[in-house]
Length: 186
Length: 280
Image (tube, rainbow over all chains, first blue to last red):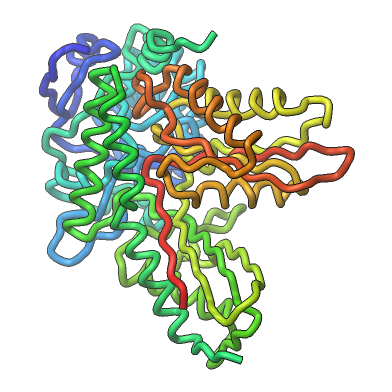
């Protein structure tokens, strides 16, 4: 693991190209929450040629749905949901410009191939530390699909969100390489 | 016949779900501390430290430990000498769930399986009810996250597969789950009964305190021990980022089954292993 580096959204081609699997980063700027139901809607809109509520090319998508915001707080608890459920939709979003995703857990071979081909990046956040992660969010705004409740698309302003590069633009996979390194089961 | 008012049950259920979602059990905190002292990976230790810090913040600030505040699983043991007054027992429980998720700012994560439309109140709960001797009512609230539940599995093994087949299935399930269920995990194993009973046994196994206690059946105690060692040799590690601690515990429960079958269920639980109980 290398030392932690600060990066800012929107993530440029150069920044994405410079990230390697295993790099620890602190991400600041704006990210958009979208998970299962929102992914389905985004892809349906794409297939019908309709405009999307977010600009994929400049957006970082965070697979997350926060708990409700209590009084006098910025946001409820928030953390990544498991990413593989978005795998069916991800290549289409990447084809249409998406370059950065945040979640937890391994991606499919097709997603990793799409990440490599289109020079994108998949970051991992630690699951289940949502009270801690909430402290890195400075603002939350509803963007689209309000009827989806917790699954609506929301814009989060974040400051130094700790992430690790799981799949870099060269097709490396940190989960696989680390597991091999530590595996002792014969 | 002892009377218990439905309103009292609603209030208890509400309190249990809010507490379970904001205060991580002492046994889980201690297990995480112990994991921190045994983990060899630097990254793994950092992840464990963040998990402990996170649980501290949640408890102090009374906010959910995890944004996934779960499907509301409820185990009820109703003494046969109890009479619930003032309304149906099940409705009292559902109302407690609704109030907890609304008033406790917990995320409502329940939807129609086909339309995916949110029910907007986190009801219905998953209610397991047993009638037991006595005049007390025991309620266990277990908010269960989707990430770890999704990685769980049940399989009808053949009697020929035997205990080696059970161990192989558990290991395969944990290995396939990888980083997805938020390791370090707790592995609940249900053996025997029927398809659904194996699953219920696996879920009940997750209620066992993480204090190192094994199943009283020697065969299961040995299996729990061996499986924990082998799971922790998989290398998945805290957060799935590599390391020695993939699971905090393996708990197995068993009951007799059909001569044709060997049902096995593996219910995975994330490091935010939440459950709280009350006896009324």
